Image (cartoon, rainbow, N blue to C red; front, side):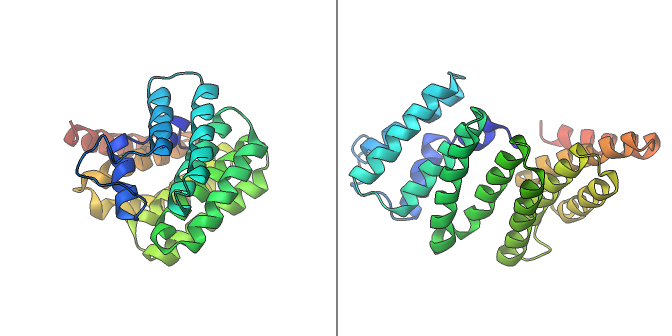
Length: 242
């Protein structure tokens, strides 16, 4: 599963770029000290707290403050969905599962209806599925991961490496639940989609991780020789990233 830190923390520059691309910036971008609104500053404060490994309760408070400011400043649905997505991830880390579900469902409602956010909806579905899994709602978790996979296939096409993100998460869920046949099949399909993109640094890490995930499944099934070969392939890819 994605770690809270990986899903929750977004660098300030990436946040501002996303907002500018979606028309959420309201001030003149000529002076970077003037183009950051109060709600953006609150988000950045939450991001910094998370990156410095501060208590998650403090991060949650920063994002809740950002959400209040989004409404007060009428920053729009793009801004609201960004904050809600971060907030839901942190609430999952705090095991506040009902709050996390509500935050992520609100984010999804926005992302399903905003064309500029369509591609991001699958990531929110991934996070929601992780909430259900951690809460012990395994059937809901599996259905939500499947929903994310189908959504990615529709938006990006069934042969897109984007679909591999869902396959990896589904494979991890099936592996943790002891469904080794399904886990192996899902990880193999992810590797098939990602291998043609091994030269692209944007996908290399996911391919390496998928190979290692598949190797772990094969090791659990007593197929050590195959597992070792996959682990060596993963190590080779990781060496190229150094």
